[in-house]
Image (tube, helix red, strand yellow):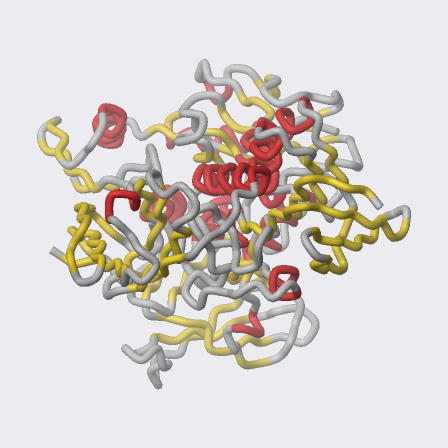
Length: 111
Length: 415
């Protein structure tokens, strides 16, 4: 399998054959390539609605990676949220999303 | 009249980094920002990937911005938001700056200025699309503002023209929010965005990328109803018979960024034709003594980490105001699309010059070469060079024995 690494902006071109990764320039790239062949994982970034006029949506992201196949399930949960508290950057918006141990956290502070 | 050592214009990532480092060099610093909040465009860049170099973490745009905002607010730096610069003049050794804000006019004076005014998106008018003028034609940044700051979805089904990074990011963002992205159309035979964005934004969501294609017409009276796309030949002219009509309610443009330098030009700052930002020395000082340029106003970067680095150097240099001397120009040889800096000031330190460059075309392997008076003084190999991916390298120009009449040229040789 041929793939392009998305771990960092370098974008290394890699190949995976029988569990052997070539073309990577770091360990993270190797781990990414192996995951792509078995269970691709992604960090997901989005926004959630708030009740505050000054900031109608709050940017959020998962604090770890979730299986790519679960992105749709995650987005359903994300779209159901309305934040009513003045959350700060790093605060948990939803815990253990899409059946994983990953949390959805705020990436900005509501002002 | 409010007086400062350094005034930074623009409170985005470049302005914040410049203000912090100017303050750390002992300067009394102010930041002038026209919007209500600091953070610049990062406020709406909710995707992650920021800060890998600067912080060793993959942050979302607002997180990256807030780290700098927190730092600036913890220091004795004055920040003025909702403050729009209307005029700048040189007044002997200082700069007079007129602003308007909610309280009316205000006047500032600075010994040095850092222009961190960012860049603007190229619009539909600048890419000559034919047809009517309906609502529903947005730049990718405008669409991003709607979705990520206002929480409004500006399209049900859209076509994206141009494969710049913001367009790719918005293809994924709109898909996640439930809009249909019919496809991304790129007039050039290669994509303009980062390779990783082609993969994580398009391939992950099965969004097709049509290279050598463009939008030739838009249809619709009040709101966009359809666009016509066509294949283009090697001269980028539409090929007859390849036209296709796509029904959609939005056309999103990601067709390039241009450094914003209206204020710089009003001061007589010389603009480099390749970066389209100020011509600068190794301290990011423009052709006007005391006027520095940083971030995307200087040169459109792909990584905010490099914006911060460049701006921190510019801010420190603005605080220090080292006297300038004779400069040696760096001539652009073959293989290079653009680079900064454009000249080396021999009176300023040049043993650790950060040299940013883009290749003119895709090269699997290339060698950056610097020659002085026809003698090769430096070479370094690079792999996977692509025009959308800016390279960074530190070069010791002090080792080249530069004199005021030295002819310095830099080129990128394909191997």
